[in-house]
Length: 391
Image 1 (tube, rainbow, N blue to C red):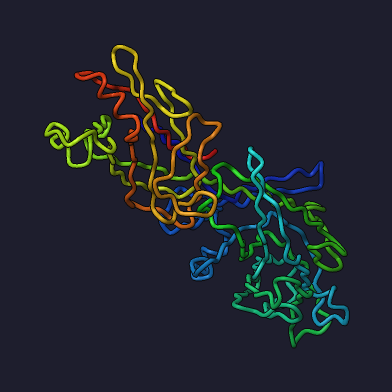
Image 2: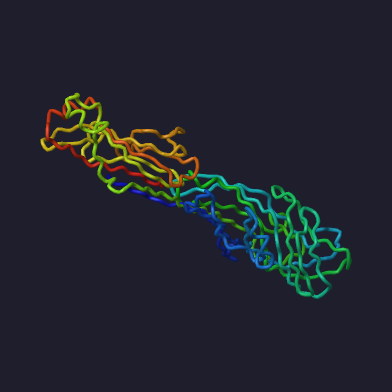
């Protein structure tokens, strides 16, 4: 008996590049899963630049950050009646995106931006810039001097944000030209649990318009905006762990009657069955396929053969932990089908980590009399049980 294990799973998000010719910029948010026992994706997207200034903003809970590759210049008018003339930011609302792997497995993600940060470099020197916010945002923190302002604003309603704008109580009508060179966000990504997802790399994208009236809108008097569209690419890399452990000597299963052969040798009649149960321990975080291959195939079962050519069928079954299910039911002494085309599809409902199972081999009692007609014979056959991470 041999065991084959294929493993792989992950999720990911990140990378940035842009093309001025196409007026679109791209970024990738990357998550991955490598069979971690907690059953959660790991964020491998590089953190936003503001994390170096405010580390706590990037380390709490399901708090992902990234830099948006959007840059622009703007003329800000303090206390302008039209809030679009102030430092003005309209952020996009919650969006859903379908991610698909190479085999066509599909899942839906929900993406929403919860907070934003900008670094403003002053191009003119007309008094200190404010970092406080009104409208659809509230200020979390800000720092400012004569040359720069950096702030973080929380978004009051991330699902459907309202426009946000800076507010100051002084210098009515004063103008400042600024360059926005860093634009970071805290975002939330609602994803399926990787446990049970077929392994592979899942990809999907969302496109956002940038500019007046767009999903990213920075108000009036904006110049040098580096693109008219932002494409956010999502990449979930799922690589499952599948590991099996058998006791030494499990490559050979000797089938015997219950209690051994002594009862038959003592004249008590033919055994009711011949069997052997092999214990195993399993680690798994994703769906697997389970099937067998036979050296001798006999009516859809594997066969055991003696030297003269007489064969008897051997039934091969499996018992697995309760959190591994086939067709929504636990797997207890479930017959293992022959050949990959008929494989059992096994789905975990939670992480399986070092839990017990068994392989069961049995020759039914109805076959034993024909075996006893060949005294001294040795019945043998190779059965390969395949546990395969489902690709």
